Length: 527
Image 1 (cartoon, rainbow, N blue to C red):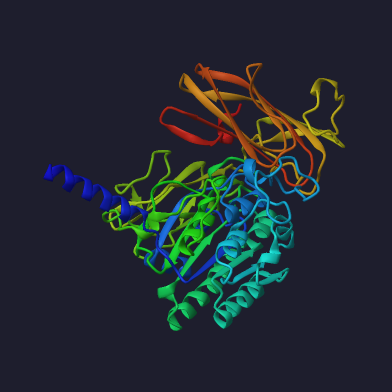
Image 2: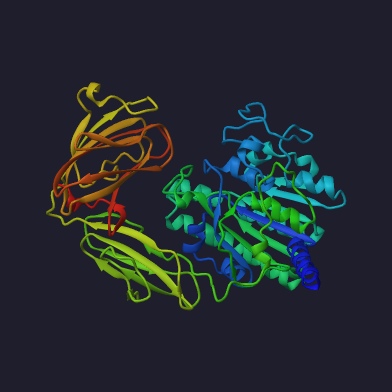
């Protein structure tokens, strides 16, 4: 009997311990639009690195689909999914609702953490600073004590942080847009995109220095995250680059150096803010308090970022100098060029690599005996005497939002040859509303099952030996669809139909087989 009673007491004690939620006097939530997990890892971010080393980090936080801003900001601050809060896309307006919210605040909108703080802790103060004025249409901002919107990113952040130190609000929400703008304009692997993250990192560093200097680190929790990531010049698809965001915790009760392994959800942000401030979310919310940020470390697990490869890939007509970098103290980089997976025993990067032939650069950073996520860049260097083997036909003034019937298009506006199934050699980067048909023969040296992938913005279809293998049709941002087929050794006919609607364009054909990762099909495989 005594053993049973003792076991019951141990069980109850453990349950009580698990139910204790850490509290903080102040919570600061900083969200950076389109600052994906891979962007943070590859940009130079000394301030965020400091937070990671002295706090907790998840580089595997999932946002909701589609990976665009409105529904993800709403999920972040509500703790609910679009099926519950009703904000389904960037076209959502209060008078243009597809899904009715399952709960309503004073304005009939799904309640956010702002509403819950005001209702459950009326004495608490809530400040909201956001650069994108469109965010305000989703919230009842009358429950906030201070709202500032429309200022440029750095100005907005500094105004928000000044207000925090002057007034000491219980909750400060700050949202800025510039990574998203840079990603759309220059690409999510561009120097401009990384520079934007580095620039915002410096302002976050100013905040952290003030928190420490004014002795507020011990009663404040800072959370840095994003609404979504990006791929090429767009987002909205399901790639890891678009769907994965960082979540970084620093301050009161946060475990220094903790790397959070389980996948988190963007809805967990609101639940964590609420838990820290003693506020509960309604049952309709799916977000969970991120307790892992406040529990002991898992052995010696440490943060190791994905390295950055520059250039990030592409077709070149002369030898290319490739540089690798890892933004973590004490990290070294291991790489391969033959398609094999890199690891601790692979070649160590010590100087820029000069490539004069096609190569798949695969690299990992290693630190404290651990290797991080892999980066890849397909570098295709075509000699000057090489003849392009991919034929194309181009039609302009295609205004439909799906692929045309190419058999009925008539004479194309121009024809020619290019090295790859890609738009890069067509000179159409400033054009919209066109269609292209590509065709060539692909040389397969080893029989087997091959997986093909096509990334397109907008629609595309892939045909192999007269069979449609992949249908990626429709007007959409860059999205990849896959298909698998058994191929024998020899030549196989490949044809791709593509159309561009408007705003952004991309086409890339990839393939993989056993022992070979998914990668762009190099030009030297076409005949």
